Length: 254
Image (cartoon, rainbow, N blue to C red; front, side, top):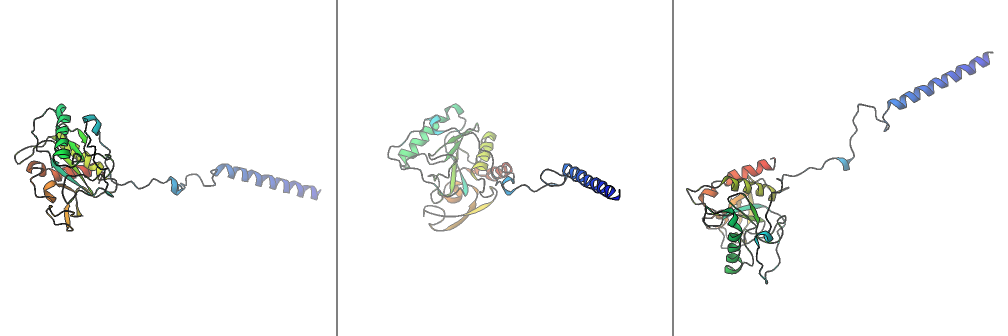
């Protein structure tokens, strides 16, 4: 009798243990982690650190404004990265109808490619009074194409020309300022310099403001006149460069 009682007790105890284990397995998360306690995601699932870069703006391609092509032109050359932006003006009349801009671009192309023998338009991009951005020099808008816009500092810079004339006393259209800032914010990212800062560039030509081989500290968003003895981009546009840099920085969420 005592033996039977002992067996019943052991069976009951074993059953209780099994019930306890079953309840515990339901309470635990299938992964073995207690509910309410977050687990660290695997490294591959963690978001990567994203650099500063504004979204890519709409850009009218060369084929849309019927860019010509010099048969003997060499292939595009590329810098390792974009370190700075050089702002220009085209010194063409203001008050134009933006629908006529493609013709203006073709005229500029002819003057640069054939008149100056640069084999292409010198600027990487051009922006009109309505805020439209046009692809300039060939080679790919998303690549660091070396232009022919600033003697001594073409490599590692992107040349952007505002279509018009912006000498002292003039005004720069708001759509143009907005487009310039958006283009700067995109081209200087995602690991480029702060558009409000300065950068050290090495001159490659004695015609620049700095003799060849000189290390020059220039604005990240500067004017043609910062590196070359010229009045370009005009006093009115030059005065807006800090504002363009500040807007670009905001677009980059700096």
